[in-house]
Amino acid sequence: MKTLLLSLSSADVFQMLDALDSRAESYEYTARHLAGTPDSDDGFCITEECATAEEASAIAKHFRDIGASIRGQIETQ
Image (cartoon, rainbow, N blue to C red; front, side, top):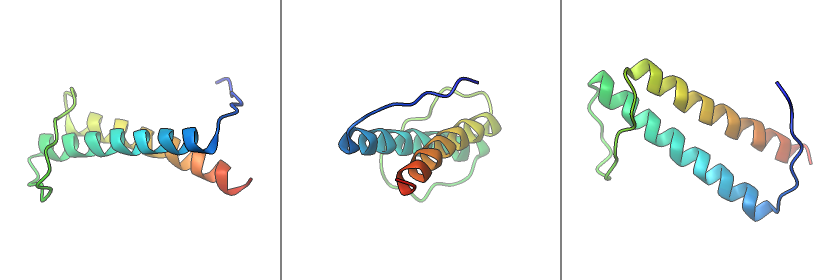
């Protein structure tokens, strides 16, 4: 896989991290919904298009992994 080096303002990077966290939360909610797990969150959430809870969990993990990688790179600077 090709690695890219991006140059962005810190504000833009933190906006990206916020978006990644939001997407992960949405897929985590979808996984719980598809698994039939009661959700204690009283907020309004729309489920994502996934066939199974496992698929939703895998996508959520991917978003979390991307965010963790970016955060790790921030810490080393």
